[in-house]
Image (cartoon, rainbow, N blue to C red):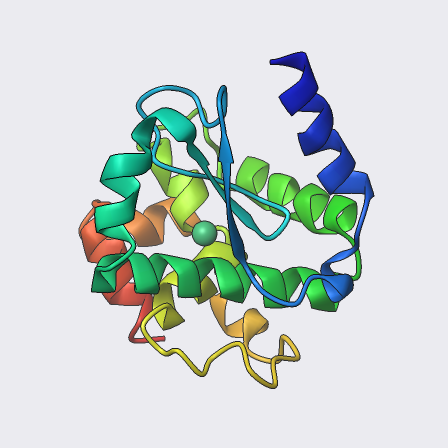
Length: 165
Ligand SMILES: [Zn+2]
């Protein structure tokens, strides 16, 4: 456990996003926590080694290609930020801005501009090529929680809504 935690810390302070060419899979014994399929971290999609059989089947599906592309968009965003620490700090501040303690709490995550952009474009496999972050302001929304509720109040409704922006 500690050994793997150390690997995660090294990923954060090691190779910067601009040195990471593409999103890669990585197996671990203790991460992500049981019940979660992946831990997305510093350009890695980390899965639990004890779920390898299930993951292998999933890697052949379209849903997997879409979620890998979603992570590739996050990698492109981090490249523009310049470092993982800066990127995750900004990401965290945006999550706080979304009021995670107020209902519906998941809206704080879904309305993070980085997530809006990734959800809106995850099916466009070309999106992160030639990425300079020019579209990000479009996904920086005001009154996020109110907007989330007006869009329907569920993650599914929100994912459809951000595609219209
Ligand atoms: Zn995301």
